[in-house]
Image (cartoon, rainbow, N blue to C red; front, side):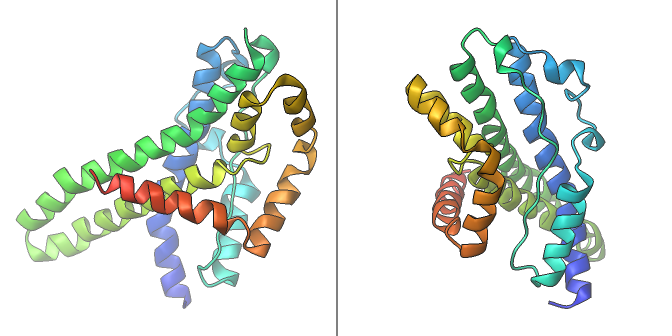
Length: 222
C-alpha cells in the first residue's frame, strides 16, 4: 500500500472512527448516569464533542503508525475510558455489566444506521446526481458510510473479548458468581498486555472475526 492509498484510507476512516468512539464512550457514561453513577457527567464526559474522548496516543498516533508500518493490515487504538464508579450503583456487579454492554450495543446500532442511510438516502441520490457530482461527492460519502459499518462492527466485536478492562470482560463479570467475579477481576491490571499478546499472536482473530462475520450477516437483513 503506497502513501496515497494510506492517506485516502485515513481520510475515509477518520470521521467514522471519531463518531464510533465518541458514541461508544458517551453511551457508557450515559447508561451509568441513568443507573445512579454521575461520575462521567460531573467530569464532562457526557458530550458529543470527540475531543473529550480522544486519547492523543491511542486514538491518533497509534492507529496512524500501525496503518503505515503494516500497510493497512493491522490497526489498533483506543479512546479515553469514561470514568465509572460502581459504588454508586444499587447493584454494582449487574449495573457495571449493563454500562459496559452499552458501548458495543451502540456501535451495532451505528452500523445499522449507516446501512440505512446508505440504502435509502445516499445510494438513491447518487443515481439522480450528474456523474461528475456523483463521483466527487456521493462516491466519497458511500466510502465513508461503508467504512462506518465495518469500523463499528469491528469495534463492537473487539470490545466484547472477555478480558477486563474490555467491555466483554466487564459483562462476563456481571454473569459470574460474586466470588468468581472478584477472582476474575484481578487480571484487569494485566488486561491490556493480555489483549496485545492475543492480537500479536493472532489468537484474537479467532474471537473477533466470527463475531464480525456474524454481525455483518445480520446487518445484511437491512
